Length: 351
Image (cartoon, rainbow, N blue to C red):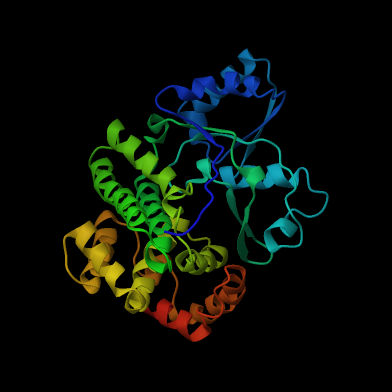
């Protein structure tokens, strides 16, 4: 197990009705005015907007509402508000985040883990680049995770979210030079929970306990805990998928469910023991090939894409994807390994 520093300052309030505390929580932190960012009009239809508004009004905290890709946007706004130049500088390394406005989150979708990490991923529509920021200043102060607020998530976004959580879990699990057994077991627990609860939620979207375990799995997959003591890893699946999202506006999880099996088929020979472990622990199978096939079959079963053609992407689009991936490979620090030939092989695995 490698040396590590684990730092996560985010307070989680988990459970039913917790969103009613947001005004009190903000008041405790001395917040005087709020930019209320949200990602979907769904929150107005299901009453959450009214609940939050009332909680803020009770504490005398005025707010301005703003829609968008919510937590990533909020973190970018928080950092950009205190940065004097173009906020995109922070994503491409031309500027540093020295401070940020405090972020408080109420989750209505479990997938990215952004509620308990410092990352924010944003697409620049002009340059067709999808990059991220990370800073100690962009951790949410408090995140409220009420699984009941996620009950109205569509079937499509439930299965895309499942793929996203699995992708967060396997990046280090398969690619790390140092991967402690305890971390492998944690990752396997997260994935096993996702496999089980996704099917339960497809059968019964109102299953609160399944929704709660799914939500906590999403948080644990990318709050730093599963990567403690792990080193020498990269994020190749995210690197590849970001090109798909940037160019074709593909839902992130849908792109990942296409990329993961294709990448695994190419990479498995570089870490055969771990791929065999994956097959055995998650699917009760013996070989790496069987484990990969089982994951791909499960994606097909729940209805998330496993082929580029399902995303409307054809062979004719590959040159543009490969060109976009040049910048991604540099940004992720993987350009030496993921050459154009390697990336072309992975993408053709997904055709």
